[in-house]
Image 1 (cartoon, rainbow, N blue to C red):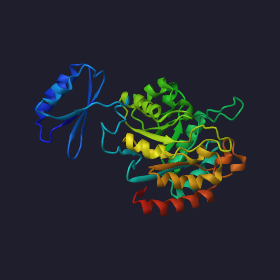
Image 2 (tube, one colour):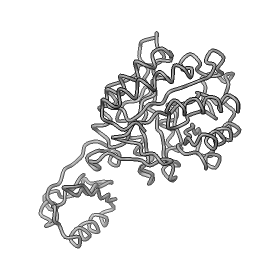
Image 3 (cartoon, helix red, strand yellow):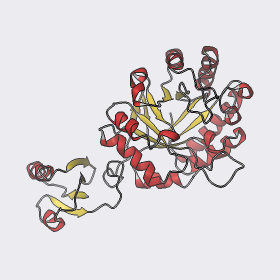
Image 4 (cartoon, rainbow, N blue to C red):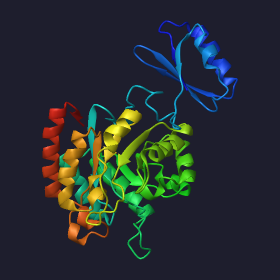
Length: 337
């Protein structure tokens, strides 16, 4: 439920109203806009008398919300969320590229790639330290040693880092990581989501392989309900009947998410198709659809990568992509971070 307050409502009346609502075991979130102030009610509002609320001197109107997600809902938060990370602003009006290898393999490999993507214009370094793999015999990542290498690459390049967390028990090892990534397989790991809600870290939440938009936003809600509102949504393709590509990039999800939610939306074109030559056209499509950024896999030797080499760009291909991005973002009017 959303309560729209009158423009010049006295603060004393608003405070009295908020206390009354909290007395009904409801959580009240206040959103201050340019022209109006909204109160978002989270909890069981079935017993609330809307007509009685509308009669309050401080209230302009009351609207019920059918969507189960409240904190991630644009109706509660009309303005786009801008998330500060490592001196950058992530969200509407800005465009960022998160680039790096699928998996951290060695100090030399990561250092080479980090320097390269920074020179091309990436603003964040991505890299997997812990790797969830379909086969138990596949390379599982360097784990804690991989995080140490990412932190060293950050020290050398100044690029904030993003890497995937697999379990709430790993939070201690991720203390110095700038952005914690929740992978597609863990989108509905609710214990992990609850634990991340208790942190103050930005969370990059990937959509599950077969999850609906509502399920995606409900996973974001789990994090936000714990008190952490620094959530970035990532569309990375969904599983369909088509076998010729790894996943189908759901371009329609980008404008839909931005209409339903105030959270930043980025796109991972590498995982979407699983084919390196498709990354560039899918990136262009994501920009045209309104994405706030891209997450691109880059490897200095894709043919010998220990993980997802087929979808990784080499440094020269990534540099060409970044030049293309600059031209298109300038046309869109966004700031290339």
